[in-house]
Image 1: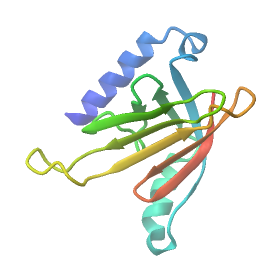
Image 2: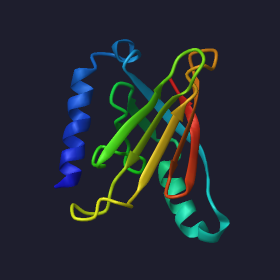
Image 3: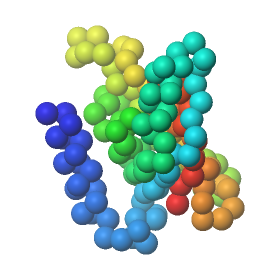
Length: 139
C-alpha cells in the first residue's frame, strides 16, 4: 500500500509540473553520479549504490519531499527544510522516519543538500541515507 501511495504522489507531482521550465523555481531534478560508504558493509553499500547510479531524484524545494526509490522521504514522519538555499547558502533538507507510532524515536534519516550557491545551471548534489553518501548534480 505504501508503494502505491508513493507512486500516486509521484504521478500527482508530475501533473502539477507543466514543464521543466515551470518546475525550476519549485523543484530540483537531480542525477546520482557516484556513491561512497563504509568499507565494513560493502555488500549493502554496493547493492544500494548501484541501484541508485544514474537515476533521477526529484526534490520539492517548498516541502523537502524527495521522490526516489532509495532516497525517497515521502513516507517519513518528519521532513524539515533546514535552508531553502540562495546565492550564499545550500538548500538542505532532513527527514526522519521514526520507528512506530508508540515509539517515534529512531528510524531512518535522509539528508540532502543542493549547492544552490554554485555558479551555472548545474548544482552539486549530496544525499546521505543508511550511511551511504550519494553525489551528483541537479538542474
